[in-house]
Image (tube, rainbow, N blue to C red; front, top):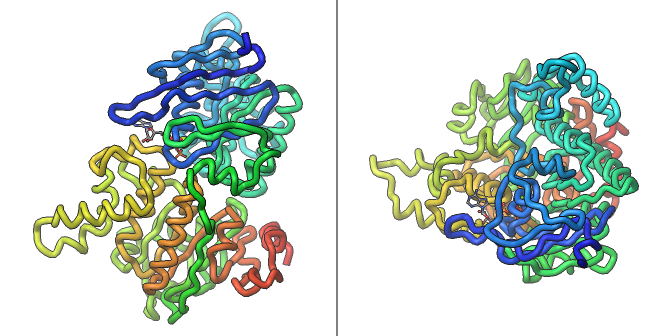
Length: 503
Ligand SMILES: Nc1ncnc2c1ncn2[C@@H]1O[C@H](COP(=O)(O)OP(=O)(O)OP(=O)(O)O)[C@@H](O)[C@H]1O
Ligand SMILES: [Mg+2]
């Protein structure tokens, strides 16, 4: 009975989706109180295994033991009853539920004698839980009114408040900034001290080395190995994941920076004020700041998703007005949004259709789309970004999270805009493909595109930007250059301090 040694023991798990073998005979063994990293490239099968343990998906074969007893949850509710909670990679909040209803879904307070929802008690309980996590939100707010980061925090609170003995965290920090991530880490350490076991999935190596004590690696649906974090280096772990050496994580190519392409003058709107900056052809302008500091809000207003209350925008020296997204696109501005499902991806269209959607108009000189050309171009970019898929006709929804993100990036880069705004472009993308996206960005910059990259991942912004603007509470609080970073004059801490408001 060596299964008793492990709180969770998954043996020979296989899962097939149509023609795709998502998992083949994988194992995952966890000891009580471990924070165990599950790592692997996009499409390696990590979420699939989490979904099996969490009761959302049934395996084709294999056995699971939880606390020494055979375990197979048929639904998420069954998993929660067994003591297993999950934070999902793809956030799918029910928009009309309040925060309280969302946290206690299927566990609501009812009146003693009649099984009717006791709203007041549920709200009070939720307020307690939120307070415990230092989250300053009313439990009555609807989920649809929250930002992605807030939704993610609520998901975390929800999972932790079930008092589960095993918590599966599938990319819990993909929408969080450094402060919220640190808060999650404190929660994880606290849970660990109480004997709770955690599976932690992330593509951010820094996080894995900060919070995990052991790891398992999957590659292409297979188990590659496991061990103790203190026995590996980041590079070794990356090589295990990708099966080859990734030489340069941030392959920044310096290219000549030319004329100003885009300029703003004192932009004001909801969440930001007096934002003036410029971007030049060939330049990658990094933008960072805590979530809610106004960076994404400014970019959304520039792209016509939200109104500006005042300020001016110039593209190629001409003042332009952007009333909506179509306006922005017609004028040569493209944007990859934080929330790929809202604006980026048509989940039920094929990969080819998704990639070529924005550039169709340009190719449409005649009435017929040149399908062969379109397929060729898509195939090229898909293989460059190593999009893992059955074929280009597959619907986007069947792709793993990171592969969906790659499709969105491919789609906009193919459009060749004058200015592209990338908001968290490599969110959930594995290290190998991240390097590919970064090198594509450099390539397009070299061809004269102006690029704005918003990212919470400091190593990424610092590695890729020619210049970085730092936001604090709706305003710009400083600018640093690549030269200052390369000389060591500016480091991660300098930037973080500015994010927190130091001058
Ligand atoms: N519902 C589904 N239908 C068809 N194929 C699927 C489905 N869900 C996952 N797959 C496929 O199974 C494989 C494993 O996907 P999975 O989501 O487990 O990867 P992952 O390791 O979580 O990747 P990522 O890091 O991108 O989140 C992928 O090739 C994916 O396309
Ligand atoms: Mg996944």
